[in-house]
Image (cartoon, rainbow, N blue to C red; front, side, top):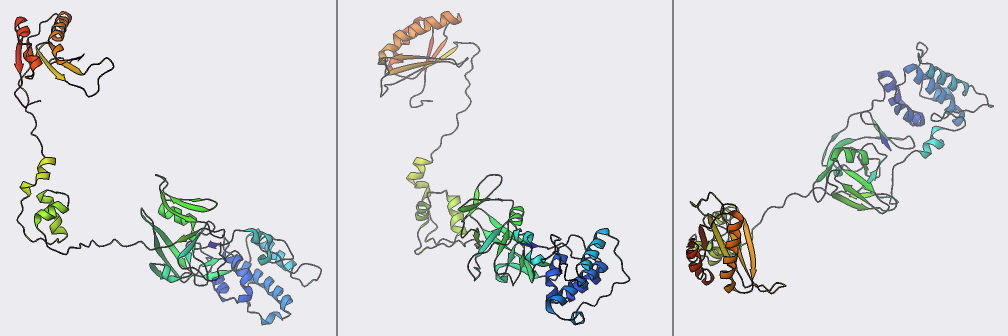
Length: 431
């Protein structure tokens, strides 16, 4: 089905006037003239109508004086050779000779049949239809051969206005249907609303049609047709916006208007305290809680609150102040050395180690890591480590930092013998 909106039929007012005044007996030839890409001149139209008039006379056995067409074009001539050929052709096959065909097809230019019975016309795409005789107001058929969205029910258009143009919707058999209104509507999808713009209201049409081209162009989507279903997708993300099933060889789309956003309704039966709302809403801060109560008009029995004594908030929202910048500085390796022991490990290593000691140089941030079987191994391990590291750097360890663990207290005599200053951290300050 083709809809000829925005495609002017003729620029000649006289030709348009004649076409609009013709009766239903000229319908078979008027429809192809209206669908031409180039307009006919009045002289060319006159020749075609005279030829058709003779044809109707032979078919009905009526004299030509009973017909409506009386236009005279003796003063007009066609300057287009192609139309001159058409004129001679019509005159040739309408001379009254019984040996020659009485009609010529206006589609394939072959004699002995009309445009309505032409094989080429029957092979053209036609509008999809279902077997039901009653149109389903909620279902629209996806039609790749339709150039416009068309509906037979004006109630399907949310916004519409009366159409005052001369264009018609032309069916596959050449029949033209009157356009009463033009408007738009929308389809709801899980992610966004999809619109049907410039939809035509044609009361004589029994189906609602969605033009695949306009639908994909206006909404920037793609439609995938599969044997048993179809998908409407976003071309960028590939997200499925809509899906539907194939029914009786066509692809219907259920049309539902976008649902309006539901109003927020708060159900509260009994006024409770501010602390109770604090517990119900997940322990928000006092500022957030006040905003929620004010925005949704939640009933509160008392504005007094003991949020400062909420144990759950203190346990789960406690924060520490950031550490101040240390005044400790170093200018060379081994000037300050840190050490700490971790263990016992719940799972011993392959070699049976359950404790580990870590040495960190303050200047280079270089780390040394040693496994141990027991905490008592710290003293001999430190002596071994200090000898190795002083030899590698050709420098002496000047200062040693540790906690107050017993394994480090035993190192004081060793540190004093090597001339190393021992500093310990304050109790309960693991950082």
